Length: 237
Length: 104
Length: 294
Image (tube, rainbow over the protein chains, first blue to last red):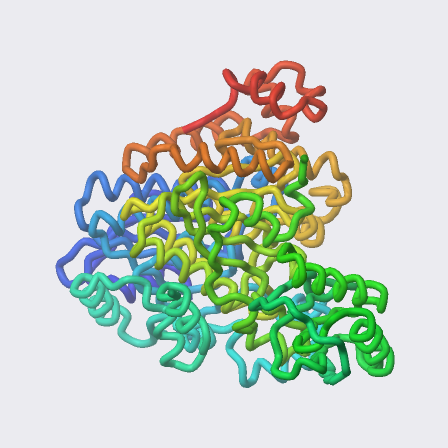
């Protein structure tokens, strides 16, 4: 789905862009009478240092100018920008800075939500959507680290074996359903997005939950050991 | 992966210790975990190896180790990624030395 | 006696960093909490899943410490590996150590359990940042053979203080990945001098990505970590604004830089052609007035 269609469905009572950057956008949408700050990337862009910096600025400004306003990340990215220049400048530092700004917003009572409406791949997703209080994706969206043919080449495991295993295991193959089963996605969205957004916001506002993705992953049978390992390290004598 | 088990006679190890770990699970290498087992007269060895079909060589390496060292009462468990017999032997000696000296 | 940090194992590094006799490991190798996913792919497991976590003391101060083993699957993060780190951070929230020390040595997400690894990295980042808001201090350390890449490159920069050796490497996408996708003209991963100029400790120190540069020696790492623990913790809007200014300045000045040497010269570093040859001490002295910092 295009970002315009996504915004129309999320904010049927109105939305307005007020900032643009390279393959990125930000603005305000109305959800049940409440203003939401949306920040996003489009066209399956690779997120580079300039975009990470622009998003960090937008988050910091939201914290300074709009107390407690919810922030919604809208994502369509094929990952971090794979350029020598971006590495030279320290892309990981820019991405981490963005993640820190998101945490500052959370600490200042801004609910943080994210929605993958196109693609989300590894590094482009980590510092943005994956830092949210609750993460969502559209049913026709795609989330992955790497496609199976590339994975087969690098791990030297036969592609057929990976494909066969991926029918039963959510642990390595692409797909939003896998990320839901592993507890990362709170929910996969379809249909009336405005109502879903309203509900998601209410849920975060009421509970301000800590990161519960591991517990969710265990409940849903997608990540069976992580939760217990955390408990054991946390409470070891 | 292939799993092999051996039970070979060995002189009793007198040093008491919880466990010792040496080596690393990397290509051409292996990690060796030593723990206390029940019987003082034998060394129990379990090998998980990525290289299939080398059971006889593993048996010889383990038997040689159990003959030369005081490995009675010890349980040896190895995660292997195609280490040569020489490397495995080195790791086993390193492990028993750490067990006896207390310094890995 | 000098003992190289680069070549040392994860357990040797911990042994060299903390006070003798103070170590206690959580979920030690004897518990055999190994990856449930690797056997399905017919891959070997490690008894500690490539990461050692525990508690100890440094100059008498209580610390929690984790060390990644770069020689097991490149120190990559899988479900168990990541959860051990998250558990350590959660524990820090309860027991309030003087610092949590992360000895990083990792290529990033473990492809064999890619989704679990990526989610785990995001959980580590969230846990660190949440704990920082609550006042827990994190010291990141880079100097191993795998460097610190992928999501772990972000984790490193989520710490309060980051230490690195000249030999350490820090980045997001590894040179091999960029070369594979964009071609050798973009990044020749076999050009070691180039890789060093882009990802190495001196460059990262000069541009303000790293706070302390350390010689490749376990004892010197210990001394530097002890100093880092004393640094004041800060996680505030003002602090992030200062960091933002530094990053914005870097982008506006060096967006067109083609090589690290352009950046070093631009910052006013004297004699950039000799930089690789300088000892850590000589280099940090020369860099003192020109290096960027937030």
